[in-house]
Image (cartoon, rainbow, N blue to C red):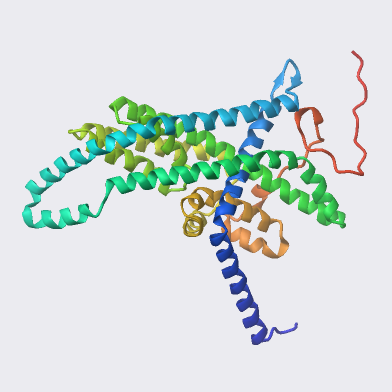
Length: 383
């Protein structure tokens, strides 16, 4: 066998590191364009999952028409977005009004701590707390909300065009590859990516909605301020692996310490929301997802760290979908299957392959057949 020269090996790794560094730099500096595009893809897969689920429903022995499935799916998603924006916008003014009250309550708590720890330690604590500006934090939250709304506008701008390209994309993949075997493999890879991400986004959205709803019930029971906003936040943070569930419990619990004069509401929120997060995250979600997205836990943490460093908070939300997409692509590349095995939870890559495609059904919004292939028409039935 031919031996690889050390100089060629060093040049290969040098070029690989250079390409990797340039890719990370491009992702970081192009985040204003790429983050809304990635979020639009995530919402597209959610919308496609809802549309396909509605289209599979049979009423009176007939499937729901494709156009009706699209209308109902789009209406469902936009109704959910409108509800979230309504909650956030309606309570934004209330949050601004409550800031002085929280500052006064925080000062009372500090005075109680001073009486316990003594004056010497209290000076160091006061100096540290003086650096925390609640008003500045509130303004930064408002600015973040403004950035979110501008990004949401781009997402909603991308989404219709992605829906238009959904069905023609299969034919384009077949046309772009002159070799039929390569074309079939690429079609299978695209289909696996689409079905895997649809399944992940659909199930994750469902369990996140349940998490936000039950956490809202717990916080509403104790009378926590802005329980609706904390419920929406619990829904959103559930998309961030591991850390998101912890933050969704810790932040409202801290607010309960400041709002109430007893520890009972704090303990109810900690244990109530903690039990909700544990049961849904460790019992319900694994039962729904099964082993279809068996990512290695180490890869989940590494992906969370990497994409958070590149894109910040949006990267934390998008880290798992991006990693799933990369894993599925690598599982279809013969020379890179070893990397997919390392990234997976148990090394079984069959979980990332889509099942054989059923014949298209144009009435239910299925994919169009590639051009040049005759469509099989069923034999006419009497009656």
